Image 1: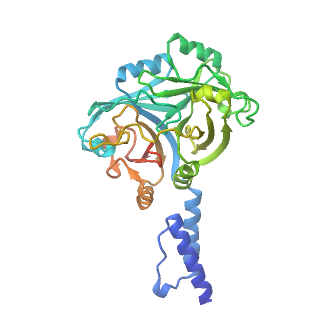
Image 2: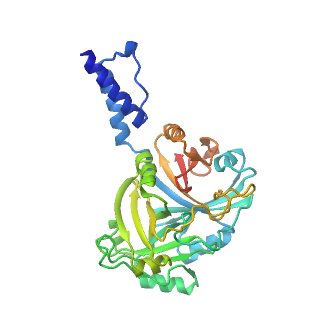
Image 3: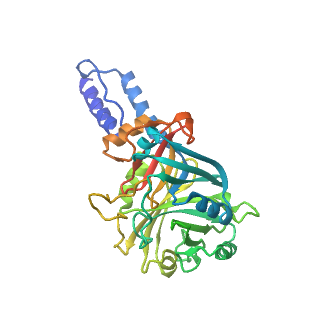
Length: 369
């Protein structure tokens, strides 16, 4: 019996390290089978309850909020939900910057939300003019449309800046994504955007509902990643998003969509229980995508700071922010925020939050509502 108990204790201690369950304690390392059952229940709950319960919004920093607001509401038919201006030590600590005064506008399209943030102080850097789709600071939102031809003609009326040469249809040689149509373009600041059309049988069922609306909502945000396996460890194994599907995309259509000659991508889609998905774009070819948008120097760190216009931020709702913060700290994750920061009067729509970076430097804001 003692040998069995020691074996079970060793097994549970290994599980506790992996799952973040506190070590079992007891006189002379002895424990009852009630302890085993209790610890097994902790492990079961940890596995059953993902840290992230929802993807709440996708945000980006803009240089001129009034200009951006006009574009997103007039051209893409987003609806304004809120408009706040804030300053103070809480927002400095949350964003890891001194002297923060910012204006944040929340917009809605369908069931999904984006946040546009203008830093009144301090001003940041613009998006590098030579940015490419396979640079790993790349991020976009995919806006679902009812009809691609109508959407493209609508965008042409507003003289949007093309990234794709024209809308592209994924061929039948890619059965996972066959028939999906997409087009890349840019907003006034140069942020990457996509309009996407799902034929029957593809995408979320809600995109097939009859409607007169042209722009329907946001299916996902896509991010450039260097290694899919590394990103899965972070988003799936730590944050708890579920892998929904994968595909290998190449061919002339993909190259013209991304405007990257010879593009060959491993694409992985992940989702929380609610909200838009998170899509990984790993370029297998070409492999000259850059990891950082700015040259390293003593005065210009090679990272996108929250006040830089190249900065995007995915906000996710978590069920236990303190526990997740401790786990991320043990994993030596990179934090933008100084700590978990309580928000005064929930002015930004959450009680407390912390901003971290994923393995490729993309920003994730963890919030507890």
